[in-house]
Picture 1 (cartoon, rainbow, N blue to C red):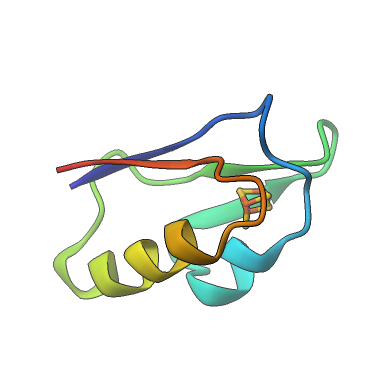
Picture 2: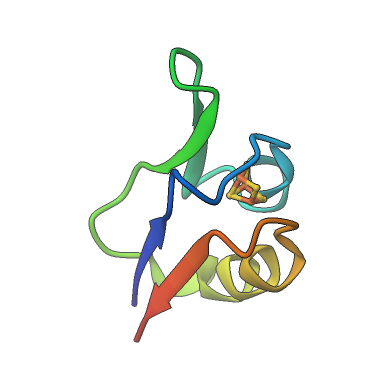
Length: 64
Ligand code: F3S
């Protein structure tokens, strides 16, 4: 699984970084979330799906 954050849609709420800190981190300069892994590890896939579902900006895009 791969995942992307659309910086134009992200409102910087930080929820994804709390839900799934191994995959998302805040870009402090831009004020948006970014993905810090090339490929989502198996054990982080559930929290990535959860983060995508909960994201208020619909900014998290999963590529299976
Ligand atoms: Fe941004 Fe959504 Fe995360 S708005 S900070 S990508 S939960």
